[in-house]
Length: 355
Image (cartoon, rainbow, N blue to C red; front, side, top):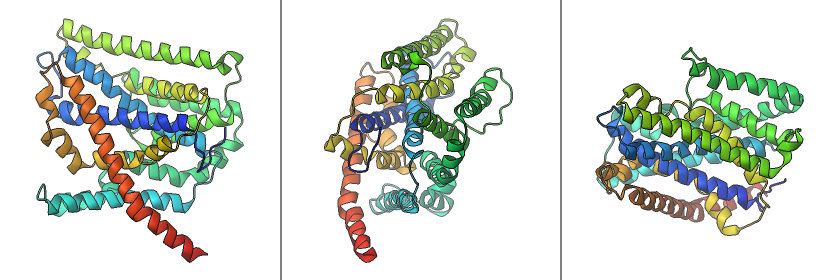
């Protein structure tokens, strides 16, 4: 399946939009509720908190899926310096503009080390996802030849070894050489999964059937839900802090499996082209940069209708849906304004100079 800049497959672009919505929903819980209440114990845990934890799992899937999709499309492409520079410039643009806006409006003024971290987010780790993504882009010219020169069996063995190091050994409470679930190693691993799907596909006949993958996806989601929800309910029943802490234990392993299956299922859907969907998906990275900026994060989750105030309300899930959609639309509008007022004029100017 080929994808050009002008004719992107809107099935995949729609999947990207779904991913960023899941990320925002995950942040609704992580930054607006869990940050204030964790670590959870029997006295603070509830079925409502458990449900929010399960919803936040979508952010883990989305992060993994973003990188797997990149691997799928970039394995046969060249990563130009212009693209990396554009990503880096967008990251700095939003970091600097947000600091300026908050200073001018009097919402918050940063000084000293806090100002330095806000203006240089790639050093502070605040934009860990985009920073790791940029580093991955720098590695693509070296990763692609390496992966293409390996035989299919060699790639399978390499992925199996990395999978075991990352996900199997930690289940036995042994030390792992993998730094974090959000580290650069994870991005390399996920990129390789996407590249493998593109280069080799699946040689087992049953796995070439799209209905088989839909079934696999349903089974994986069912297993994850049964294990995670079951652990949480047992923790509540027996008032066990240990069980409550184990609710998210299997999130990472299921996240990689489910996100991989999601891509394969999406690729089995008939491709179509929709300008509006592709236009919106072009702002997905900006939505990430804007809403998860530390200053904006505090403002949207703690100042505007604080999430924590809803924890005892029966309307918390409606509140979450409304807030997630509001944040998404607002960020997309902001980015489209940036594109039309800055990005497009600059690109036209640069194209004229190169002629």
